[in-house]
Length: 625
Image (cartoon, rainbow, N blue to C red; front, side):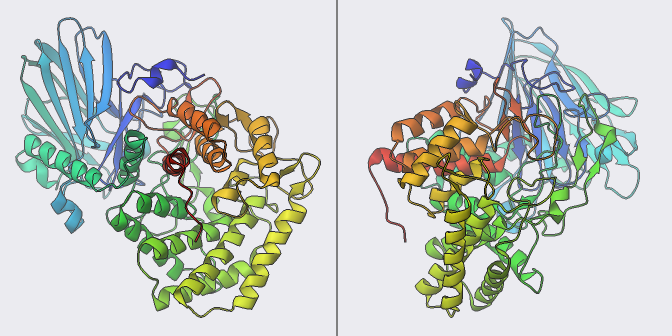
């Protein structure tokens, strides 16, 4: 059962039960701030202990979450004895408030990255962190330490005091220097900036950390920047058309997706972090700061359902560019950097080893894998945007047909699939399923838009995939669809079958599969990706329940008419969110967050499940078209 404190959205007292981190606090004891260029994690102790700069997939500047001694952090905290801390977002914004309380004093820190309507329109503007310290009640002393460590703590830097209130950090090499500008005097301690200052009740201090060329640092306009940022986020939130039962959690998920999106390209990163362990012993430490094509269908669906046509269009355009740049045979990569380039090769990062059993990885080796399911994700996104957004162009349709032809010739290949197995390829149900989606959506789109297409050939391939799944991936002994032919291996990605409308949600075969998944992969309400306790993926350690799978399970239950069961699973999963409504990739049976944090796919699945539950509870059953 989850720690009951997670059910209080304003109680951020960290439970000391998470996987060991150099800070000794759980991974999810953080809020996230950002500006659609980069992000930063702010702990409940008032420290920015993870931040990549200047872009979300750039090297870290602060990485103490992975290595407290070498990673670097930007910490601010009062010196009085703290009885309690609380952390929250200002309503309908990504502005984070951390409060420190005692019987004699209350101190709060407001953390944000400035954004404004002008910045969004011009795709330019500030790229910095602003931290405002306020003495809300009583007088107090406050301690500050800004200790950047450049290039994943691999690089050196020179620190210079430019004036009483400005410190310059100049990394070795060609990177631009960063500065800390302040409204109170700063001093140096070795290569770090420090301050110990007093605030009387009602007084504030402001700090700006960013590039030396940052325009905001000229006059430190903290009050105006805060007002503009609040206005931006609230105006963006107001555009949402969602008015269902779960508005608060749905909008927090939407605000996270916006944070993880690139204002330059429209791509959405899978997570803002790397190296966060997926197992309690500290193993499986991947880099998720890239964009996976399979997230396209979920992202476009979620953004369109929430009324964010512009964001859906930007992401669709990003996907279209990837499709345009694919190989001559119609194939393309599994993942991309947010600028559309190939992610770097995977390498261990010994400088941020921390207390893990193995070093974290930067780059991602899955970039070179074959994952045939991504083509279904792509075509589903194209279809949905054509249905709810704009009609596809002539050139766009030519790219689509080339991709569909590739799928027609390669759908029966073995691959590594959605779970990115590191021990070889195999014929996978989910990959076949999404290849069926690719053919199905292309056929539907061509019919609805009267586009030229080789219908006999495409129909034949779609039917062949359909027959292959029913004949080779159905296990009559356990009455369930299985991961690979002639196996007994359950796979939670099978939950996508009714969600992509391959099978009726009340089909007897599906209902027995749903029961098998719940019994074989579920630990109430957690759903594990595949059969636990074996060496299926060739990696050591037993991971936690995969959060997105739990929301898929809730949605599948609701679609099957088991609405009360689906609602209970969904509501139980809400208790696994952290104190500000963010989800990690996985959750251990004991309740702690595992994996990179926060994860976009989980929040996308939450939005989809919330929509389905609203419909089911309202008795609304729209027709598939």
